[in-house]
Image (cartoon, rainbow, N blue to C red; front, side, top):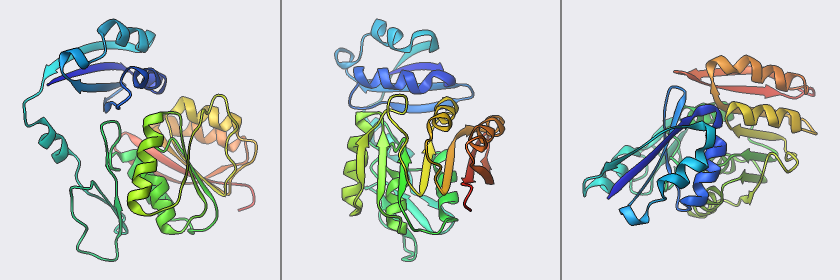
Length: 271
């Protein structure tokens, strides 16, 4: 088994991922190191995308490509990497090979990370969940960039309704649809392009996206939600993003940080 990894600049990561998923539709693994994002695919040498195609997909965002032989027990190692995540003593997110928590009061979410998405262990997802737990669980909610569906499924389990989960990637739509079924929640899961389609209207919007997309979302909002939670941000990017949404009548009410990452909770003018 071979691990083929492509490293790109963070600012261009979302666009590169979209191109990579055309070459590797089964999904990619994502890790990060400072201002560089690494995307990796696994397979036998003849099954992997060609190096020229990978370089072309990354364009000017390209940093480097490297390969690594993976031992036979790589699947077990991959599973060991994904462990249950507990948030604020109220929610526990676990992969399907882990059993439920002993504490019956925890909201138990089962999320298969697949190869392209995690189970909620990333700081940006945890921060979103923390801020979501501070809101009254009522009204409609839209999760933009839903990934594996962690945030949308948590919102539905907490009592938000209806819940819409949107993502540009086909793999994300498929993963969210599957995980929603496993957890017994009803979601409206759709493919959506922030750059080409209108922003959804909902009482609460969650947007775990990178800075460039959050700035585009701020510009595209036609109707301000009552609550907006944004993440995917580096701490140094918070003020710029908060100012962009303030210009649309959404003002910062809370800010959470975890290492280099941060998330904001903003409220509309009626609150």
